Length: 500
Image (cartoon, rainbow, N blue to C red; front, side, top):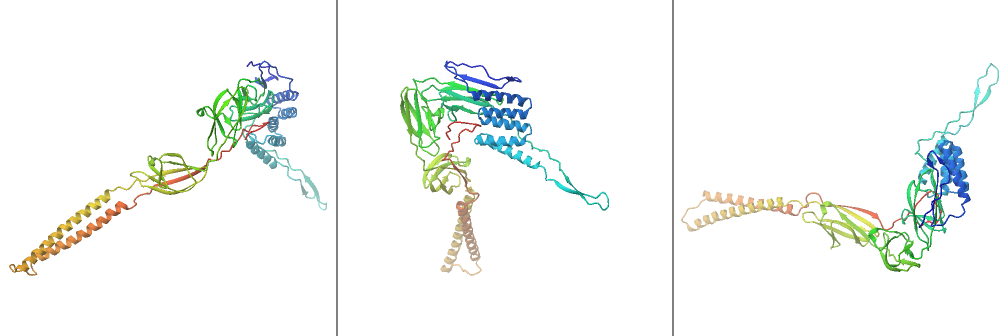
């Protein structure tokens, strides 16, 4: 496409280009100039001149003249800034409010409201107090007192320190034919339809301009506070590509064509050109199932494709934690995943969650999963207590038991020997026999060792089964991800059709 760039309009002041006209046309000249726009450019240029010369009140009047010629809200903003610089605070507040009324969704609306509140507070503090009457003492005895009205001094308006503010640059975009859709930087952000007037953030921007039946155009513009950028694009007919209109059950769904890894190319409802042939279309939106369709695009034709998106009825569960790495996650008695688990699909309701890892205490917890919510579980598994203490206790129990058995056996043997001697009448046995005392001692010690064995065994059982040390812990966080708000761009003075 051939591009013609027409000369700039306006004047240059202090090395700054105050008005820039950018024309793009494939061999077609722009039609008759917009008289209102021409007058607005002239007044805008004068206003910038006066503003730089610090003639702020006159600059504000010039910006208002530009607004009368072309009602772009940015001109009201510039007038308010100039009034504030010229300390005409009442007029500044008036035009800031008018700017907010004309551009309520501007990106700086909140900051302007804060500024207006600060200016109004400063003006209220500076209001002149009411006049008061004072009585002077009589000059001579017997004369009546003479009342006198005292005029109080007027207080100066003391404005608090506010963020630096400057006039806005203005952008005017028109196309042939009118009504073309304008995107800003990418097709995910719709600016509006032509003709469009307003202000954009300072810097470089890419415009994507599309109209059914015409070739799409991409243009780059540079916006600065001291410029009025006038962009005119004459679109040429397109006969090779096909025009597609993609819709879904819900607006704002992301549209992917042919390769998802390259990212979304826009949101539903989506319009644009495609090369003839077969294409694969995906539509995605959080909280809905993905929809896919293979379509055949014919050159020069218009195609309307609608993809059905079904609302999801489940929630998601994510589990992570350094101590739980590799642990088995069991949900309601069934294996679900191994940690880390990322966005596992779980049906709404109450569930029994268990996390098992060898050498660590099993974590058990009841969780409630809600529809279209992401539930994140941060886990910290506690190590199982050492079994050394249990083994030591069992060892002592076994030792005491063995000793008790041995001493019991020896005591029994002494008893049997004494009984044998008594029955044989060969050896005289009486109560002074030392074997009686020895057998009793063995028996007492054996019984004591049996008792100690029992106590040690109890300690072993305790160390084996007691829940010693801290328990495994879980912290649950919940986030709603089922509904993604679709927020459109907000620029000062936008005009046209919007998709939110």
